[in-house]
Image (tube, rainbow, N blue to C red):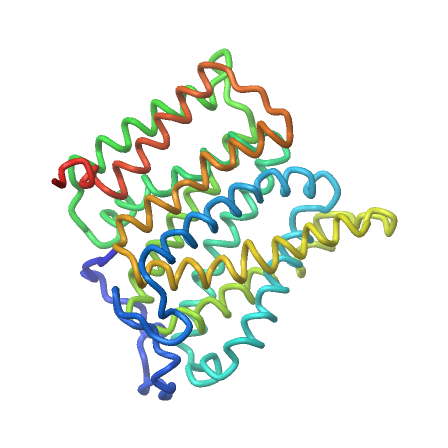
Length: 328
């Protein structure tokens, strides 16, 4: 998403000197340009984006099991701290080349918003189902245009307003139970707000910066912050809790859902239209419900299904404006 930068960024986010150069093969190509390991057809990357959306949907059910054993801050500290180490090992040359105050400041700001998003989402998961958590988290797609308008005065369209109304109706059906809202659903919506803030931050300050270098600082700030807060707010799980199955699950979250997931998303969006990529990634929400029903035995009422459909339609409308229906 291209945003108008009508508000001057803080001075500490401005470059005091040009960034160090990076070898051409490390640069991210423009849309539709194939190069190096990314030299695959658009169809290949569409498939990879769908696969990543399904993996993220699957992770909601995994997280539901893990958060019953591992406290929130410890889990997020391990997940993002481990991902930061993997990013450093894979992209150390790019991180070192762009080591300056602007990259660190933007990366830390991104990390604050994304970290808060994951904290509230994970806390919410302890008091709601994986399926509801998946769909309510997806509402960040609808919130982004409104936050962009508040920050950058980017015009709102009738599609944004229509998506917001659809989304509100879907949230009401999903979250309201006898005119009351579960605490977990409310916490999940707070997390969605922080995810939207993180996306706007990337769009505003990260358009001309190296995404992988920024992501390292984002991961590092989340992992370090959560690990630092953990001893003060949570109790460590007993040693007997660290079963091979639990360790394997956390390793999957670190390697596949966080480290590889980011690279697949960035490479995929560089080779397919953004509207198509956003639509494919939004399949995370329905896949989250599917795995919650199949693996966790979640029961879906007609009201929940109707709410899920409305939220999914809101995401599709917000991201694509239903343009694919108007093409010949």
